[in-house]
Image 1 (tube, rainbow, N blue to C red):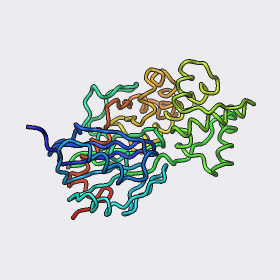
Image 2: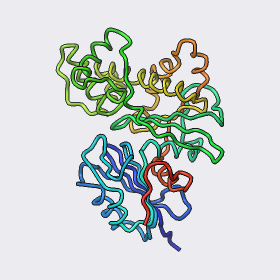
Image 3: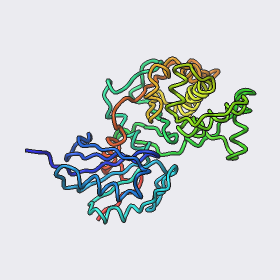
Image 4: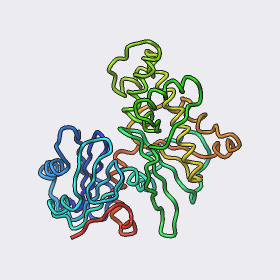
Amino acid sequence: MSAVYTTLAIDIGGTNIRLGLLEADSLRPSYIRSFKINEFSGLAEVIELFLNAAPPHQIKHAAIDVATPVTQDTIKLTNHSWTFSIQEIRERFGFERLKVINDFTAMALSIPLLEPNELKQVGGGVADPDGAIALLGAGTGLGVSGLIRSAAGWYPLSGEGGHVTLGARNARELAIFAAFWEKYGHMSAERLLSGTGLEEFYQVICRLDGKTPELLQPADISGRAIAQTCPACMETMTLFCEWFGIVAANLTLSLGATGGVYIGGGIVPNLGDYFIHSGFRAAFETKGRFKGFMQQVPVYIVEAENPALRGAAAALHHRFDKIGITCTV
């Protein structure tokens, strides 16, 4: 007998949208499709296209994670022009229950569901099974979250830690950061630790060195850095990895994350050994009197496929009712 899907999970990033169908009581989508956001006028159009082509389904429950704060019915993406109403989406598709949460809250909820073979450790010791967990990941933007243990199990933290302020460590960084201060009035972590950040940093570095930047995509920049064929790309990626370590360390100290640091997103997991052998870990551990503490904290790269979809589906559990926004009949 073929499966009947009852739950729809949707992961909306700044560039891609992924949709997955789940059977009743399952937290792992078995029918998944991905689309480019720029090719559609809005969320409803994508859902309709997806469901029309999907296997037999009777969708009662749906969960959406989205790369923006979730505080009211009208949702507007931080790094895209899409806007939608939670209530209107629920009514249009007849969902009995629709849950909307932040994308990195969904990532956080996926962490306890991951298998050991879906993770790659980058230094550190053994995680405290009851310790707080830190999570961050760079893609179109920089997502940040965390998990704390409660009597009922793991509970996610919702935040916008990608917008914390970066401070230059030396004269070279001061010159680079000055270009961002002039343009934006603020140098946030996301201005470097994201796809658009890589592009802008590369361009600024080229101009500081008196060179005309090429129109490179993030994958081009990282690829040339790995191949050591472009000095500006190499400097960009060196800064990226080191600052990723600094921001991850700051989050670790703030949360007391002895349960480990987990890195997701679309950039770091695709860097492979380059990231592992970069200055990330040294920058992560350089915390003065707390160096010994930081050396013990394990860091894991999340290599699982579509973890946010699994986390979004997990958010439908009633113990997470106070997270995000839940819309019912």
